[in-house]
Amino acid sequence: MSQSYNRGLIEDFGRWREFSAGMWAWIFHKFTGWVLVGYLFTHIAVLSTAIPAAGQEAAVLQAGDDIYTQTIVTLEELLLVRILEVGLLAVAVFHILNGTRLLLIDLGIGLESQDKSFYASLILTGAITVASVPTFIAGAF
Amino acid sequence: MAERYSSFQQGGTMWLLQRITAAFLIVVLAFHFFLLHFVHHADEVSFLMSSGRMETWTYYSLMILFLLTATFHGVNGVYNALINQGLSGTKRTVIKWTLILASIILIVQGFRTANAWAGIPLY
Image (spheres, rainbow over the protein chains, first blue to last red):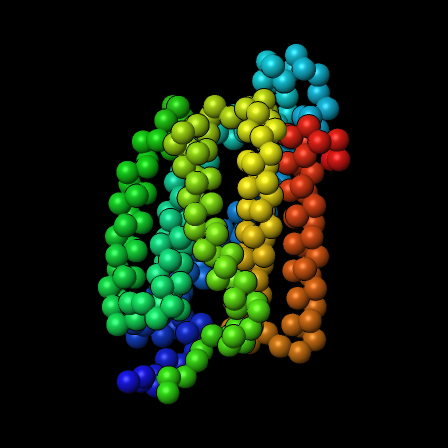
């Protein structure tokens, strides 16, 4: 039987101590969504350096001296950028896993264990992020 | 009966599109991260390598579809998050059209970038 449940205004962060697992999932999904959409705009802006690079001479492109290659290489040399990329991975993985959880719940699958699947999303996000650190940091030093 | 708290209209087209793009993005975002961080590495990126991938029409089409679905899913998500925060009236209309404009700029810029790599003269 369906149960009516008034959770109140979830955006009232002052109530965070009262938040249940599902409410945390909602908050995290929104937060990671904001980060990802912000990154999408930044990502396209950085990749747009390929537009002037396309007009550069073949020898310059071959040597990797074009503006696109140089922009990416310079950014990837910064340790801060590598750390931010690990953060981005964590954010993306959580959004993917929790998003899968939400799609399944929308289809009526796993509603009774939605809190457990949220905890599983968190643990799996942590494990994948930690396991990815060596790959993301490689070549930064 | 359980109450609904989603800001999406029940059974609405936007609700369905948000879910369909989500299902697509789960797979393509994971593929994108895997290919560009684990198969290739971020510090090995070069114009010619990116260009080589984009000259394959299947990869180009996938990336264009990725751009379109990610923009829709992200911007529609932001719009609905703002409605949850209480956005309404004239402000809602202004924000809606600002987000639509931002999406158009992002998509145009994404297309130009993809074309520059693919060697398509339209950029």
